[in-house]
Length: 352
Ligand SMILES: *Cc1c(COP(=O)(O)O)cnc(C)c1O
Image (cartoon, rainbow, N blue to C red; front, side, top):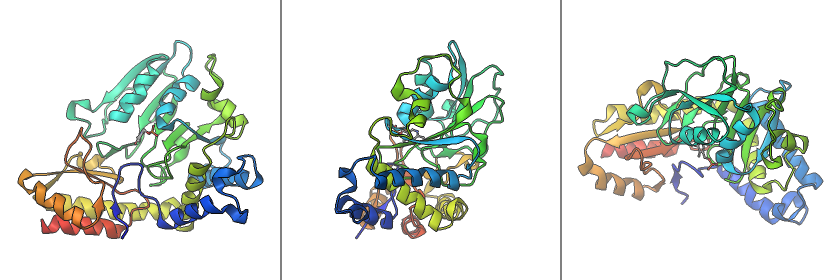
């Protein structure tokens, strides 16, 4: 029997997507060739890339608003560097929100290229909340935030209002909730949390913000180069892009972001209700900032740990051990996670 996969990433994908992906490895589009042994410039693969791009814009309601969609490599981690390379002026300055391990890594890369102003940090409380009081200097080239803090289980519910460009790392909550995505000038997300397998990074960027830094940018790090080549400046990661396309099609078929958001809210509510009502558990993140994707929680009575761990393992649950920097447990309940799997976890917590 398939396990209940609560892994933080790489993470759960819809079962029907996995089946289609498996078929395409053996025989793609009835070509009697594998998806991974044909040219990325073949008509069949170019159609996959075009469809993936179109689905991204459609699902995020960003069609005809001046955005380009890229499927790159190097993970969200390379975007930590590409973003300042493409947006930070020579001797420029950027504002960063320090809300967890990933935002810390992002601002560290930006420091290689210019001045980084940390406008707010939740480090004082081990990143268990989203700072709400901050002052963004008027002369920054861009503002960077991390919409969902995968490790700590916090999530921005609203985003900074700024005249500067707004950049967001949405690796772990993209396509999970309705937002006005046009408030962002650049969004990036590694595929492996909510969209597909590891190996490709989605970048959505407003065309008219590029080419303004006066910097020489190495070709592989230059968004304009990738845009001009339709994400095929070099050989793209065909399999992760294909599976991402299938997942986006799955999402569209079920009603898009509005439909999945309803399910995600119900799923998170089920689990947080148990955490709040069961004296044996406590949530790790501040209530108003809780993530609907990564639910972090702790046992209040460590003597129950052995019994709890045994119970969830026996129920076929996998991937809920907490990250070492928070401890306890983390249930990642991304788009593809069915509510039935969460009910099984909740039943165990209840019985403990
Ligand atoms: C996982 C994660 C990353 C790192 O992604 P890679 O693709 O491994 O580089 C960055 N930001 C956030 C918010 C993440 O959850």
